[in-house]
Amino acid sequence: MKLQMMITMSDNSRGSMLMVGSMAAFALEDMLIKSAASTVPIGLILAIFGVGGTLIFILLTWRSGDAIFHPFILSPPVLVRASCEVVGRLTFALAITLTSLSSASAILQATPLVVVFAAAFIFGEHVCPKRWVAIICGFVGVLLIIRPGFDSFEPASLFAMIATLGFAGRDLATRATSPLLTNMQLGIYGFFILIPTGLIMWWYSKVPVQLNLAASAQILGAIIFGVIAYYALTVAMRIGEVSVVSPFRYTRLLFAILLGMLVFGETLDMITVIGSLIIMLSGGYILLQRRGKQIKVIIS
Image (cartoon, rainbow, N blue to C red; front, side, top):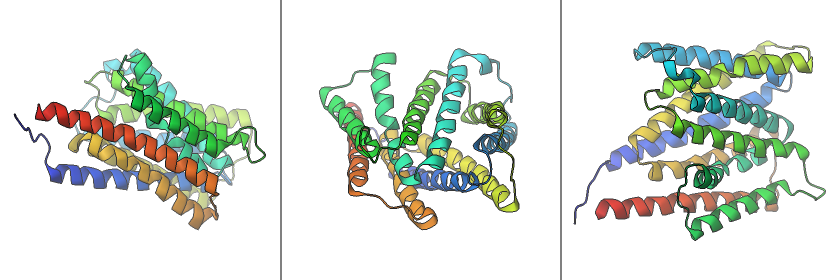
Protein backbone atom coordinates (compact mmCIF):
# COMPACT_ATOMS: atom_id res chain seq x y z
CA MET A 1 0.00 0.00 0.00
CA LYS A 2 1.49 3.32 -1.09
CA LEU A 3 0.43 6.65 0.33
CA GLN A 4 1.48 9.55 -1.84
CA MET A 5 1.40 12.98 -0.23
CA MET A 6 1.28 15.05 -3.44
CA ILE A 7 0.22 18.27 -1.77
CA THR A 8 1.10 19.37 1.77
CA MET A 9 -1.40 20.49 4.35
CA SER A 10 0.08 24.02 4.25
CA ASP A 11 -0.64 24.18 0.50
CA ASN A 12 -4.27 23.19 1.10
CA SER A 13 -4.56 25.71 3.95
CA ARG A 14 -3.16 28.54 1.82
CA GLY A 15 -5.33 27.48 -1.09
CA SER A 16 -8.44 27.48 1.09
CA MET A 17 -7.67 30.94 2.49
CA LEU A 18 -7.04 32.27 -1.01
CA MET A 19 -10.36 30.81 -2.15
CA VAL A 20 -12.20 32.53 0.71
CA GLY A 21 -10.41 35.79 -0.12
CA SER A 22 -11.33 35.36 -3.77
CA MET A 23 -15.00 34.89 -2.94
CA ALA A 24 -14.97 37.97 -0.68
CA ALA A 25 -13.45 40.00 -3.53
CA PHE A 26 -16.07 38.69 -5.99
CA ALA A 27 -18.84 39.69 -3.56
CA LEU A 28 -17.36 43.19 -3.23
CA GLU A 29 -17.13 43.42 -7.02
CA ASP A 30 -20.83 42.52 -7.31
CA MET A 31 -21.77 45.04 -4.62
CA LEU A 32 -19.87 47.87 -6.35
CA ILE A 33 -21.37 47.06 -9.77
CA LYS A 34 -24.87 47.02 -8.28
CA SER A 35 -24.18 50.38 -6.61
CA ALA A 36 -22.79 51.97 -9.78
CA ALA A 37 -25.72 50.69 -11.85
CA SER A 38 -28.07 53.01 -9.98
CA THR A 39 -26.68 55.93 -12.02
CA VAL A 40 -24.59 54.41 -14.85
CA PRO A 41 -25.98 52.21 -17.70
CA ILE A 42 -24.99 48.57 -17.14
CA GLY A 43 -23.62 48.36 -20.69
CA LEU A 44 -21.15 51.19 -20.03
CA ILE A 45 -20.15 49.59 -16.73
CA LEU A 46 -19.35 46.32 -18.48
CA ALA A 47 -17.35 48.13 -21.19
CA ILE A 48 -15.25 50.05 -18.65
CA PHE A 49 -14.89 46.90 -16.55
CA GLY A 50 -13.66 45.08 -19.65
CA VAL A 51 -11.12 47.80 -20.48
CA GLY A 52 -9.70 47.81 -16.95
CA GLY A 53 -9.50 44.02 -16.67
CA THR A 54 -7.97 43.67 -20.15
CA LEU A 55 -5.22 46.22 -19.44
CA ILE A 56 -4.34 44.66 -16.10
CA PHE A 57 -4.14 41.13 -17.50
CA ILE A 58 -2.09 42.38 -20.47
CA LEU A 59 0.38 43.85 -17.98
CA LEU A 60 0.50 40.63 -15.94
CA THR A 61 0.95 38.53 -19.09
CA TRP A 62 3.69 40.83 -20.38
CA ARG A 63 5.54 40.66 -17.05
CA SER A 64 5.45 36.87 -17.12
CA GLY A 65 7.00 36.90 -20.60
CA ASP A 66 4.05 35.29 -22.37
CA ALA A 67 2.57 36.39 -25.69
CA ILE A 68 -0.36 38.79 -25.58
CA PHE A 69 -1.88 37.42 -28.79
CA HIS A 70 -1.51 33.65 -28.79
CA PRO A 71 -2.17 31.66 -32.02
CA PHE A 72 -4.92 29.73 -30.22
CA ILE A 73 -6.90 32.90 -29.52
CA LEU A 74 -9.32 32.04 -32.34
CA SER A 75 -9.62 28.33 -31.51
CA PRO A 76 -13.22 27.08 -31.02
CA PRO A 77 -12.87 26.44 -27.24
CA VAL A 78 -11.58 29.99 -26.66
CA LEU A 79 -14.37 31.50 -28.77
CA VAL A 80 -17.00 29.42 -26.94
CA ARG A 81 -15.45 30.42 -23.61
CA ALA A 82 -15.56 34.12 -24.56
CA SER A 83 -19.21 33.83 -25.63
CA CYS A 84 -20.16 32.12 -22.37
CA GLU A 85 -18.20 34.75 -20.43
CA VAL A 86 -20.31 37.46 -22.06
CA VAL A 87 -23.57 35.65 -21.31
CA GLY A 88 -22.56 34.97 -17.70
CA ARG A 89 -21.27 38.43 -16.84
CA LEU A 90 -23.98 40.33 -18.70
CA THR A 91 -26.93 38.42 -17.25
CA PHE A 92 -25.48 38.29 -13.74
CA ALA A 93 -24.89 42.04 -13.83
CA LEU A 94 -28.55 42.45 -14.81
CA ALA A 95 -29.59 40.00 -12.08
CA ILE A 96 -27.83 41.85 -9.25
CA THR A 97 -29.06 45.16 -10.63
CA LEU A 98 -32.73 44.20 -10.94
CA THR A 99 -33.00 41.78 -7.99
CA SER A 100 -31.40 41.42 -4.58
CA LEU A 101 -27.68 40.67 -4.38
CA SER A 102 -28.40 37.83 -1.94
CA SER A 103 -30.88 35.88 -4.07
CA ALA A 104 -28.90 36.32 -7.31
CA SER A 105 -25.74 35.09 -5.58
CA ALA A 106 -27.62 32.13 -4.11
CA ILE A 107 -28.80 31.02 -7.55
CA LEU A 108 -25.26 31.42 -8.91
CA GLN A 109 -24.04 28.82 -6.40
CA ALA A 110 -25.72 26.17 -8.56
CA THR A 111 -22.99 26.62 -11.20
CA PRO A 112 -20.94 23.57 -10.04
CA LEU A 113 -24.08 21.43 -10.26
CA VAL A 114 -24.68 22.58 -13.84
CA VAL A 115 -21.03 21.85 -14.67
CA VAL A 116 -21.30 18.27 -13.40
CA PHE A 117 -24.64 17.82 -15.20
CA ALA A 118 -23.27 19.13 -18.51
CA ALA A 119 -19.93 17.28 -18.19
CA ALA A 120 -21.82 13.99 -18.13
CA PHE A 121 -23.22 14.69 -21.60
CA ILE A 122 -20.42 16.73 -23.18
CA PHE A 123 -17.34 14.88 -21.88
CA GLY A 124 -19.03 11.56 -21.09
CA GLU A 125 -18.02 11.73 -17.42
CA HIS A 126 -19.57 9.09 -15.19
CA VAL A 127 -22.10 10.43 -12.69
CA CYS A 128 -23.28 7.95 -10.08
CA PRO A 129 -26.94 7.86 -8.92
CA LYS A 130 -26.09 9.65 -5.65
CA ARG A 131 -24.61 12.57 -7.54
CA TRP A 132 -27.68 12.73 -9.81
CA VAL A 133 -29.85 12.96 -6.70
CA ALA A 134 -27.64 15.78 -5.37
CA ILE A 135 -27.93 17.63 -8.70
CA ILE A 136 -31.72 17.30 -8.69
CA CYS A 137 -31.87 18.52 -5.08
CA GLY A 138 -29.72 21.51 -6.01
CA PHE A 139 -32.07 22.45 -8.83
CA VAL A 140 -35.01 22.13 -6.41
CA GLY A 141 -33.17 24.64 -4.19
CA VAL A 142 -32.99 27.04 -7.15
CA LEU A 143 -36.73 26.67 -7.76
CA LEU A 144 -37.41 27.44 -4.09
CA ILE A 145 -35.52 30.72 -4.45
CA ILE A 146 -37.14 31.71 -7.76
CA ARG A 147 -40.62 30.31 -7.00
CA PRO A 148 -42.08 30.36 -10.54
CA GLY A 149 -45.85 30.54 -10.62
CA PHE A 150 -46.13 32.26 -7.22
CA ASP A 151 -46.87 35.89 -6.41
CA SER A 152 -43.32 36.37 -5.10
CA PHE A 153 -41.82 35.32 -8.44
CA GLU A 154 -39.48 37.94 -9.95
CA PRO A 155 -39.01 37.49 -13.71
CA ALA A 156 -35.64 39.27 -13.45
CA SER A 157 -34.35 36.39 -11.31
CA LEU A 158 -34.24 34.35 -14.53
CA PHE A 159 -31.18 36.42 -15.45
CA ALA A 160 -29.35 34.74 -12.55
CA MET A 161 -30.31 31.33 -13.94
CA ILE A 162 -29.01 32.28 -17.39
CA ALA A 163 -25.81 33.55 -15.74
CA THR A 164 -25.40 30.18 -14.06
CA LEU A 165 -25.59 28.48 -17.45
CA GLY A 166 -23.15 31.00 -18.92
CA PHE A 167 -20.53 30.56 -16.20
CA ALA A 168 -20.93 26.79 -16.31
CA GLY A 169 -20.33 26.90 -20.07
CA ARG A 170 -17.25 29.05 -19.49
CA ASP A 171 -15.84 26.54 -16.99
CA LEU A 172 -16.48 23.63 -19.35
CA ALA A 173 -14.95 25.48 -22.30
CA THR A 174 -11.90 26.29 -20.17
CA ARG A 175 -11.29 22.57 -19.75
CA ALA A 176 -11.25 22.18 -23.52
CA THR A 177 -8.80 25.02 -24.20
CA SER A 178 -5.17 24.29 -25.07
CA PRO A 179 -2.90 23.85 -22.03
CA LEU A 180 -0.48 26.17 -23.82
CA LEU A 181 -2.77 29.08 -22.94
CA THR A 182 -2.10 30.54 -19.50
CA ASN A 183 -4.81 31.72 -17.12
CA MET A 184 -3.59 35.28 -17.61
CA GLN A 185 -3.99 35.01 -21.39
CA LEU A 186 -7.50 33.63 -20.93
CA GLY A 187 -8.15 36.55 -18.60
CA ILE A 188 -7.22 39.00 -21.37
CA TYR A 189 -9.60 37.43 -23.87
CA GLY A 190 -12.38 37.01 -21.30
CA PHE A 191 -12.31 40.67 -20.26
CA PHE A 192 -11.71 42.05 -23.77
CA ILE A 193 -14.91 40.57 -25.16
CA LEU A 194 -16.87 42.61 -22.59
CA ILE A 195 -15.77 45.88 -24.23
CA PRO A 196 -17.67 45.64 -27.55
CA THR A 197 -20.54 43.81 -25.85
CA GLY A 198 -20.98 46.54 -23.26
CA LEU A 199 -20.70 49.34 -25.80
CA ILE A 200 -23.30 47.73 -28.09
CA MET A 201 -25.65 47.21 -25.15
CA TRP A 202 -25.16 50.83 -24.04
CA TRP A 203 -25.76 52.17 -27.56
CA TYR A 204 -28.89 50.04 -27.95
CA SER A 205 -30.35 51.11 -24.58
CA LYS A 206 -29.81 54.83 -25.38
CA VAL A 207 -29.55 55.58 -21.64
CA PRO A 208 -27.80 58.91 -20.88
CA VAL A 209 -24.54 58.76 -18.95
CA GLN A 210 -24.32 60.07 -15.39
CA LEU A 211 -20.74 59.11 -14.62
CA ASN A 212 -20.06 61.09 -11.44
CA LEU A 213 -17.09 60.76 -9.10
CA ALA A 214 -18.81 58.24 -6.82
CA ALA A 215 -19.85 55.98 -9.70
CA SER A 216 -16.36 56.19 -11.23
CA ALA A 217 -14.82 55.13 -7.92
CA GLN A 218 -17.27 52.24 -7.65
CA ILE A 219 -16.46 50.97 -11.16
CA LEU A 220 -12.71 51.32 -10.49
CA GLY A 221 -13.14 49.40 -7.24
CA ALA A 222 -15.10 46.68 -9.05
CA ILE A 223 -12.25 46.31 -11.57
CA ILE A 224 -9.62 46.05 -8.83
CA PHE A 225 -11.58 43.55 -6.75
CA GLY A 226 -12.50 41.58 -9.88
CA VAL A 227 -8.86 41.15 -10.89
CA ILE A 228 -7.83 40.29 -7.31
CA ALA A 229 -10.62 37.71 -7.14
CA TYR A 230 -9.66 36.13 -10.46
CA TYR A 231 -5.97 35.97 -9.57
CA ALA A 232 -6.59 34.57 -6.07
CA LEU A 233 -8.96 31.95 -7.50
CA THR A 234 -6.34 30.89 -10.06
CA VAL A 235 -3.59 30.54 -7.44
CA ALA A 236 -5.88 28.70 -5.03
CA MET A 237 -6.81 26.11 -7.65
CA ARG A 238 -3.14 25.58 -8.53
CA ILE A 239 -1.53 25.23 -5.09
CA GLY A 240 -4.26 23.25 -3.32
CA GLU A 241 -6.26 20.14 -4.07
CA VAL A 242 -9.35 21.03 -6.08
CA SER A 243 -11.54 18.84 -3.87
CA VAL A 244 -10.28 20.65 -0.75
CA VAL A 245 -10.42 24.29 -1.86
CA SER A 246 -13.49 24.17 -4.15
CA PRO A 247 -16.09 23.87 -1.34
CA PHE A 248 -14.94 27.26 -0.06
CA ARG A 249 -16.52 28.78 -3.18
CA TYR A 250 -19.79 28.77 -1.24
CA THR A 251 -18.47 31.46 1.12
CA ARG A 252 -19.33 33.90 -1.69
CA LEU A 253 -22.98 33.54 -0.75
CA LEU A 254 -22.24 34.37 2.89
CA PHE A 255 -20.35 37.51 1.88
CA ALA A 256 -23.13 38.47 -0.56
CA ILE A 257 -25.80 38.09 2.13
CA LEU A 258 -23.75 40.19 4.56
CA LEU A 259 -23.13 42.97 2.01
CA GLY A 260 -26.74 42.85 0.87
CA MET A 261 -27.94 43.40 4.41
CA LEU A 262 -25.41 46.10 5.34
CA VAL A 263 -25.31 48.08 2.08
CA PHE A 264 -28.72 47.56 0.47
CA GLY A 265 -30.86 46.68 3.49
CA GLU A 266 -31.87 43.31 2.02
CA THR A 267 -33.63 40.60 3.99
CA LEU A 268 -34.01 36.90 3.32
CA ASP A 269 -37.22 34.97 3.86
CA MET A 270 -37.12 31.42 5.21
CA ILE A 271 -37.84 29.76 1.85
CA THR A 272 -34.87 31.54 0.26
CA VAL A 273 -32.65 30.47 3.16
CA ILE A 274 -33.79 26.85 2.80
CA GLY A 275 -33.23 26.94 -0.97
CA SER A 276 -29.73 28.39 -0.48
CA LEU A 277 -28.82 25.70 2.06
CA ILE A 278 -30.06 22.95 -0.28
CA ILE A 279 -27.88 24.31 -3.11
CA MET A 280 -24.81 24.57 -0.87
CA LEU A 281 -25.28 21.11 0.63
CA SER A 282 -25.87 19.52 -2.77
CA GLY A 283 -22.78 21.10 -4.29
CA GLY A 284 -20.71 20.35 -1.19
CA TYR A 285 -21.75 16.70 -1.28
CA ILE A 286 -20.66 16.33 -4.92
CA LEU A 287 -17.28 17.89 -4.18
CA LEU A 288 -16.70 15.80 -1.07
CA GLN A 289 -17.68 12.62 -2.88
CA ARG A 290 -15.17 13.40 -5.61
CA ARG A 291 -12.52 13.97 -2.96
CA GLY A 292 -13.29 10.60 -1.41
CA LYS A 293 -12.77 8.87 -4.76
CA GLN A 294 -9.46 10.66 -5.26
CA ILE A 295 -8.22 9.57 -1.83
CA LYS A 296 -9.08 5.92 -2.60
CA VAL A 297 -7.11 6.14 -5.86
CA ILE A 298 -4.06 7.61 -4.14
CA ILE A 299 -4.04 5.03 -1.33
CA SER A 300 -4.43 2.11 -3.72
